[in-house]
Length: 503
Length: 47
Image 1 (cartoon, chains in turn green, cyan):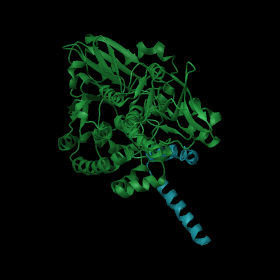
Image 2 (cartoon, chains in turn green, orange; image 1 turned 180 degrees about the vertical axis):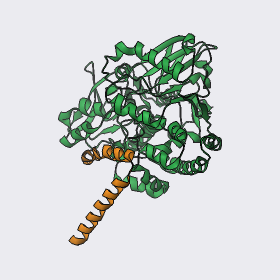
Image 3 (tube, one colour; image 1 turned 45 degrees about the vertical axis):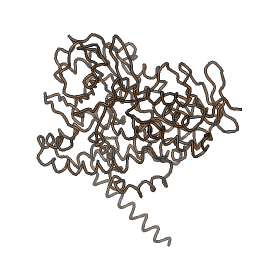
Image 4 (cartoon, rainbow over the protein chains, first blue to last red; image 1 turned 30 degrees about the vertical axis):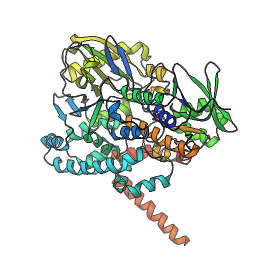
């Protein structure tokens, strides 16, 4: 006897997307969320009238959200008010340069030719390949179960541009940019994208460079903050009779004859279901919730072999003035060499970041309602180790805040910003791990290198445990708003295939 | 047939060695990094 058709562990974007698809198709579905809010890494923190995004800060490839809403029988425009964001990035360099990359590729070309005349035609070539990669390949891949080599062949047959990208799978991000652009300035300005999947330019697969082109297809910010996206999906889930229980932590997955048959909560309550959907880190899911004793040896070896992704400490600032910035996102950047050194030297030696780069998000640029009138919100994000050689993150918050503000003021020229800070909060990797139960404070679940991607990433439909499905950043296609929603769509289609429709 | 297989294997090895020496320092570092994960791929493929 089942209590529910499906129990979903975690109310992140992937879990909510598949839960809503199930509810729409008549499955009695329960989402168990450990915190008191939805969205996981796409959520909002509110304090003193300021609203901060605590992870995702923008949406690209918004048509994947359209696809989800279509499957749910709803129109996105009835739930989300998209604000177009342009330019994509503002840039601040240590030597005092500032410039922007507009959404229009031709306008970006003008900026690039300002650095190197020769890079203009190279940008055209890069853009053309990026465009076909995004429209034909990445779009298909993100919402398609990609579990086997055969799946990859099928996608390649339908999307010939994938074949052109194969060359860049054997190259890293750095070499890929070098094969297109002669200007070091241009290459460095595009290099942050590698850290967007949690890897330095030296270790990030080359094809990710083309994913960066997605931003030139248009980027958007939802009015009211990023939480509006999971909020809308949760609302539709509720409209179809779905149930979310907050402050409900799952202790383990119930097993019955080698099959996932529900969950046990921390308070000992057992909830039986026909199948289980996970939206938590795959390492936690398999090694703790399912348990090594319920897994074959090869599965334990596979799960243990994955590294968790890099953590991203965040500083949230409330300001009583408009910051001297040019775009929703500002990349305060350095050379590619230094970006690699941060990984190979500082990250490896567990140093608190004291050099390098940061991404500054300015959500009130798009939506002033997120702060009191005349005030603004800024989020400063860097990447740093989970364990520090100098001590514990809880004791080093203040030092970290001061170091990063020094960077912003003295290295990147935003002088006097300290005088306008009305509130400051530091969210460390430890805070992130405590709140979202992400091992190692990982922002993208598992490392996203080529050997942990596609059919080498944990499958949407578990092969090791029958009746268990995965969504979110741990599974194909990895972290980010469109990929995790895509995982929910793809997992949803597999569950409908396996269990049919209830109605 | 056996000889053809041996020749093919030798050619693949020569091509790999040539590619390695032609690769930049950065690409080599990348290849070493992903190479270290190759032993786990048979397990990862099925999880």
